[in-house]
Image (cartoon, rainbow, N blue to C red; front, side):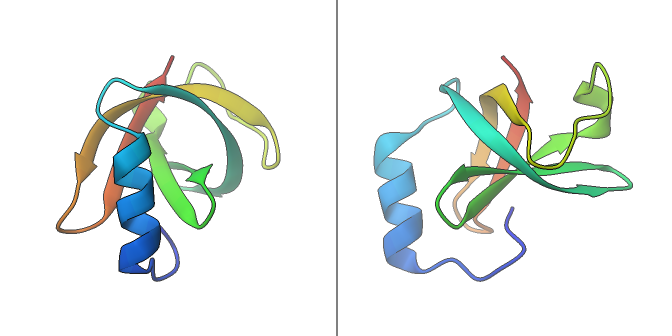
Length: 82
């Protein structure tokens, strides 16, 4: 999921490089009541659901995460701690 519109080119580049189960480092960009959005690639944000937190992350911190799911139609990425 992203807060901003993602171009088809950006999404395709992300999909070419990443698939379910991939582990990557991502930066926390915002906190919301149901989780945190992390930038998994330039312009692409994934959601780490609050149920996946061990403790509240800090905006600006980097977390090691695993891609749980990728929804190409809605251009959403679900994350879990790696």
